Amino acid sequence: MTKNKGDLNKEYNRSVLETIRNRKKRKEYARRHRPDHIWFGLGMFGLIGWSVAVPTIVLTLAGIWIDASFKSRFSWTLMMITAGIILGCLNAWFWIKKEEEAIRRERDLPDDTAKKNGEE
Image 1 (tube, rainbow, N blue to C red):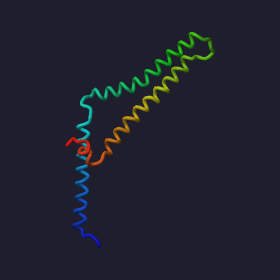
Image 2 (cartoon, rainbow, N blue to C red):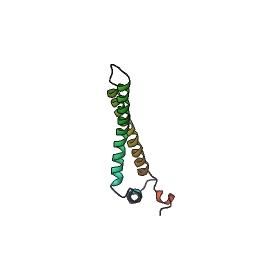
Image 3 (cartoon, helix red, strand yellow):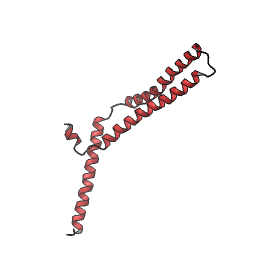
Image 4 (cartoon, helix red, strand yellow):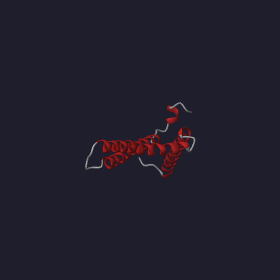
């Protein structure tokens, strides 16, 4: 059985309206659950910075101590700085990936998310 042009238009209009409703629900959900201030963004920026800085500083201090305590033809300080930066970057990558996954999960929420969370 074929559908006439009027039925196809109605179906198309319904799907467009449903898409708009879904986007509106996701936007409202995001507004209710977003951080209120710029401090959240600065905090995340700080978290990423510290996740690189702390391992670098700790391993640099360990390298300085090793160089001072044991004689070697290799510079442990330089090796530990490099290792600290690599470890810190991996740590920052972990945090960024975690936040990205959280954003994706929120974006892909089902249509009745607000009802499931008891927020309507």
